[in-house]
Length: 390
Image (cartoon, rainbow, N blue to C red; front, side, top):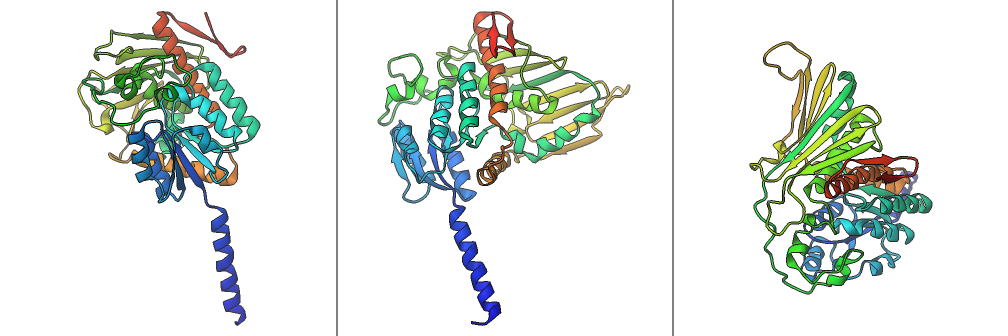
């Protein structure tokens, strides 16, 4: 073999070895609709999704179809964490399980991608921070706007606004009823309840868990995690001063949590953020169902799901954006970009775009909103003691 062929052969062999060593082997915990979507995206981006875990047999089988060929099935997440061949775990369970599963996963030496919100309760979120930083594992919270190029471009426009004292945000759509689906296979109900209060098996609770306090806080939490995190990012904020949340009555039969809510968040940076959820409004296309408006002294930035517009101060009756971009249908790319960032950080050991601290900062606001709404009062944050004040 001549020198040139030898060098080429050696380079190819080295690349193959490096590629084998760089393989990332993953597991999904919670393979419902979102879990299947994440599994498919992780797989598309090169992760070997070799394990699927779910306590509901139909979801487990659907998850296996989305995963790698020959993926192993599990009905207990702790058995997944015992597998040395698994490098990363993706957690897409109901909210009340997120924190404990993250803690158990990093203690087992796994890197983690967890859906938002990172924690259902404030104390649990601080436990997650301690565990992640002590074990030096990579945790990406599924607040994917931080990896979306449209939002990154929007963030760069913030210095044109001048002082911002008010942020208005909303997420509006229409939900007619809670799910009427019936259980269609084996369900380990006690394991699904986990740390939550005991209840008899209830298909409505299982399929519509967003609307029950034990497991979440309604759409103001499910959608609020994204919106509040985006506000924190754009405004360079961390924890609030106080949160006040109000609502009408629940208009979805069987729901504990109202579908129409509004929270006012006071920040130490001297601005007020108001986030309103209305799921009894008309139905919108995804490009138009949400907005964050940053009202500056010089300009206003409107940041939607799939576009943005900058409006300069003007005395004109009609004003038009001086900068505008719309990319309807582009938002799915945000999740892939977020996964790609996570994978890069698994290799580099750097912090990802949505760190554990950022996840907790959003979770604190959301947990305070729940407490405010349920208690009918303004809730204050004690940053020194890291707790809510009565």
